Image (cartoon, rainbow over all chains, first blue to last red):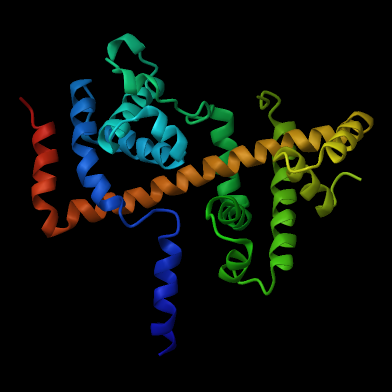
Length: 187
Length: 90
């Protein structure tokens, strides 16, 4: 009985970051992106990778920016994929044709981080996993503090907040140590 | 004075622009007086960027699950064939 009661919660937690409607969006928008990647000489795996990156970028776009670009979801995702293709493979932007809407699309500067940053992130994923997951929940779950505290298993908003800042401090100290050990790690 | 949780919270409020103009001025004066505080602020900014990158990485892992689902679900055969045709050698 208890296991049954836990189930809906688990599902809810897993789907907190990705909306269930992503399946439908995926089916609709992957083929045009794949067609573009194929035309550029990429493989199926390249297409999948660029498409997943494009979806991640798309999820970060504010409603205001979406209104400014004025494109359908398919066109928007294809536009992001074109920009990412150039960025990821260091291609000449003249190799790809951009329409007006696509020209209005901006990709976050830090989307493909430099090697040192990726290395640091890999280290934190292992050494600081618990704190990274907690901090991710705080900054990206978009839940009111009270609800989030309950979900993460804290008795009060206060104790959740204390833990959040402890984690922030822990990760900050790790970043500090690591940046002392690689001297080229400054951006 | 550098690493009390309180200070970490203060740094966050400063970086998110949530301090009042007078508090902000005071905080900036403290950074001038204590260079180690400025270092903490810079490092904390870096942590926010790393959390964002971590979040993106995890989203990609979640999308991989969606991908596997769509490419293995028998009901999605026509979608799969449509994609396969794109990559078929000419």
